[in-house]
Length: 493
Image (cartoon, rainbow, N blue to C red; front, side, top):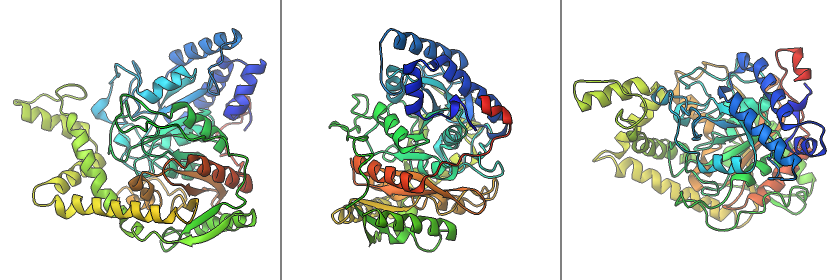
């Protein structure tokens, strides 16, 4: 698998600037790759050929005139379809928003356009970002490029698959309980959940507002750093965005781990983690120790309750956020004899089963007589989770664990067992509850040829150290495998 669409962002940027190829040619290679892979993987919901070509032509003109907007200038990028794009359909993979074209760009999207990025299109996801397999999309599942009988993870499975196959050089997703890191792990790419508030949520269709965070998916740690730096920083439109300086994300990528204190989370290496995932993770930990890291075991007792707490807090916030989809202002409208009947019919027709399940669960948890027993208790667990992390980071610089308890599982295997599906996020949810950053780096393949992801976690605004360790993991693993694609034609794509 070789060609322009397989370049790293760094290599593509060098080629654009030394005249080896143009942004229009780079985009054409990516779109040709998509033409080959989409029938097998369904990573995209929309490919904006006309808009992307105009952006590529503009980038070529600016670069030729000496105007350089930075690392993403002229680079083809994909966006998860819950990020608002002005005039370009944004559905959140739901019938509720079929045909919806936002009147504005979200802040992250606007910053990408300002950086000269070429937005190829919008990628598939679990409806309203609720799921761990991208099977909950109203427009059909995305398939894992490593084995099309398996899931790519979720909810940002389309973005992960696009990056894995080369139909985008980088992508963005959103992470509420692991929705960037888990698909990155299952699809063999790098995925990053930044510190809560480091990237503006303005223009991100809300699932659970205290947990949602936009972040990058890339083929390398260095590319992920570039993608994150392009969108990070305070935004007047998001009251929860961080007002201070953005961490120096790229500065320590080559520094290694000599003397770095790494804590292994014992609860996330225990029962429930598949043997090959555990052994691959343990081998990487040993190699980090051999590279000079100081490795210790760390206990985070509240992680035992993290999954239960998350599936009360997230549905409760989902219940409130999705109340705006009522058939009155925008989105699907199914007429009825009364306003109440119209709302009922619109929501019944617009929401899929998993979204409906979470709305009902969240509404129940917030209802009179149950608020304190369920939602209130879950928030107490969240506080304990934060305290556990704060205590741990007094003794270590980063924490590590598997990203996912398993590698990619077969399509359909868990659709009738919500609890089994929810368990896919057991390793990723704690950092969403604490608000801390975390990333997944691919380290190896299991005996079935499916990727294993290694999770690096850091304290709030600790992205510089997290990326430093992630880059060291990447060098040690030397993971350069790519999924076999369906046609030899990809050599020229």
